[in-house]
Image (cartoon, rainbow, N blue to C red; front, side):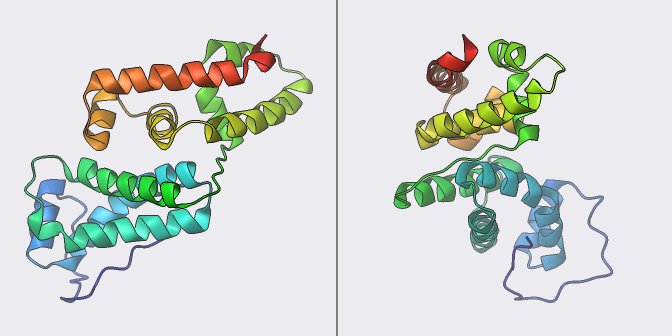
Length: 208
């Protein structure tokens, strides 16, 4: 899952970039030093990939979209003015590409791992109560709930699914999500509330 960057200048393998701040890496990258951009890729590709994967439910699509996002960022780097952090900027690129991809794809599927489900239930008291007992039935309940959660997530719009993914899975703040999705925190809270209400309604028979 390594983004392929056009090799316009050779990578200086002797330069140690890990200690540099993002702003310094961006400036060096704009000056054509690929090793600096490689460090930015190393810092953020896993988190970008995880978000894209939770949106697409496909490792192959997540690989492609993550790589495409970093390539697009590299090509547009000269126009990056630093008005936001690189972290926010690359996420916004990846999110926009993923939403466009999902809109073009007729069939939609969403998969959430059991680990992600455990992260989700911490934010939902009803779900936590549903699987809280330490009995063999817990695994059965988790499997049932995961299947129903996947089905419910498919019924959310791309925007609401993304909001839930960024907040409940990636653990981002309302402010971070607002910057990535280019909206204010009130809109983020509203979307998150609506998405959770929809999920709770869709899962009501399993929470009663």
